[in-house]
Image (cartoon, rainbow, N blue to C red; front, side, top):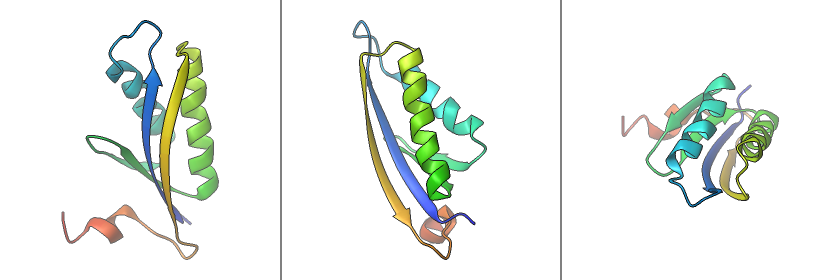
Length: 96
């Protein structure tokens, strides 16, 4: 059961001061490859899954940033945990 909504914003330091967008695109690709439901927004991406899936996903994103040789990465993360289950649509349906 999907019990967690996680919003993540990845802010990588770039090796030579390059634009961060290609690195953010890599982070979004990792999210897409996870198979979890997600929604990209202008300043963050929200993912729906279990708490453990979300935590593993954060690690995978940071591992990819290391592979891309960034000197550091800030991952700003927020969780909404509901043991009985939660979906993005439950929170946004009145706005969609």
